[in-house]
Image: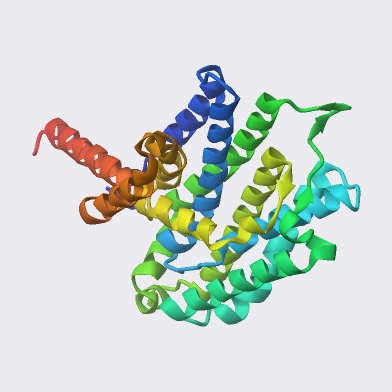
Length: 324
């Protein structure tokens, strides 16, 4: 059985989106709806990281910078330039992609921890600019973002949820399409051995640069969604804790898996709310939980689920094969 057939169809992704569409009717209040929106936003952010690191094997520690760049660009165009939402979104993604292209051409010559440190430095620079360039970014106070409107009426929280869900659905289907097709197989070949990938005709530099730019655009889209939900952007969007959240989602959900970003985002966003009852021990309990995943589930929850499902499929195939 080929890798593509093992990856399956788009049905699971569509099922996830269908559940997301009915989720607001299952929730009990505005706080839970906001948590659901944050889950989708962090899932978007983590899907870009999953393509770049989980499949292409390029460790970038600057995704939080593009997350903030997308949000700031959207906020500036909406509040200062008085642009409407659609062109502001397009321009925000274009800025992220152009910066990623300019940054990726020299940086992707680096390998492993050198690339990680270079992209981390970019994130730190962006944070410094955001907090110190007060006339442009608003400094630590940030910038207000005008609410989305349908006609002359601002969208309510349910309308905003479905806007976020729409963008999450676009990214999820794109993420699914890439990893199930020949591009996904090429990325995995690059991740496993660049020399071998080059020997079979894969232009690994071109693929890595494309994924770096795409991951930046996806991070920028997540930033735009966050600004739409929060109606404010500030330097905290480029802080190191955002990167920690991305890495935690990768560990919990499963790096290099189809649905790891979504599963990991659910756990990372919802779990702290469940651990509040532990009071001062909340941080300790959260750290112990992550440690358990590192020790006993190195491929995350999605890796465990996919392994079990794959083994069941093999058993069914063997049982239906008369020559088995």
